[in-house]
Image (cartoon, rainbow, N blue to C red; front, side, top):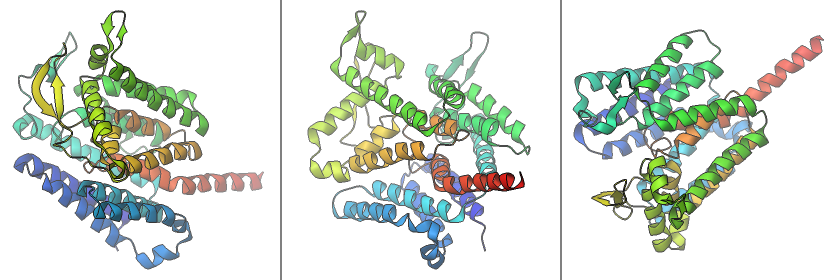
Length: 401
């Protein structure tokens, strides 16, 4: 019998082959092929008869049926194949991790090992074949200037440093806070720190600071819920201020936010305007995103158009909202509720890193790198098991006393 952890390794290696194939051929159909292979591999690894009889899985069927209804309703209406695969991927990963209850140490080892492979391939390509992933030489915005040192920013095999910095911050916190095993722990702390410096950007720096603050001061689920809710409301306030185009000390807010968000704020505003002006009722239920419809103008820092179009909002939550508004709202509310009910102090900083990274990156929770999905779902699907073990240890200790 194939070990469950090996299924996760298989899905990750398929992802790496998919990315390399996309970068070398430019064929995005490979991304769908990767996710279909992933879904089938996980489905066939689940023994369906045992699954239906397992008491621990029974309370998940309501969620499963809800997502299934949304999926097939999307087929009937006009939702994209992307939405269907995304929903199925979420269902399958949840059932897989809930059923097998993979040991935490083995899961952390899987995260570390796959990160090392990801970095190893990225550095090799960056050094010997950089044109495969990105046109990086000679671009000023890809240079890091620390006054005493200048160097080219490391790009991952996905084509940029945008996800690599968040990925590395997760590995750093995972090994500093969560990982209690001595096996290669210091190695991954040093490696992730080096990669963070090599991809030095503002967003992960803010994420790391907030994650550290969260780890130090937040001790209860209700406080974690309020912390993430405040960040969400702050982002909504930014969207409102950006749209109203007021001034602060004589400076137009759209220019100020343009600087702070690295040009993303203008993309967000234009795409939201398009959505509110063109979506009908069914679009809000099943989504109606298309790259063609959501292409908007990109701008220079002084507000002039650059005469090129962009469809990527560089924001995971807005992109998921555009793709399927109802589904996103339900899942986001469920996420915050789970943070309140299933708070775990050592895992919460990791969740904060992913959560904040999603505001400036649209690739974290997507059909691409499965690591972010797996970390979130692993925590939520194994919470009861981990806490039952802790309670069991406490009862044994109490009985001895």
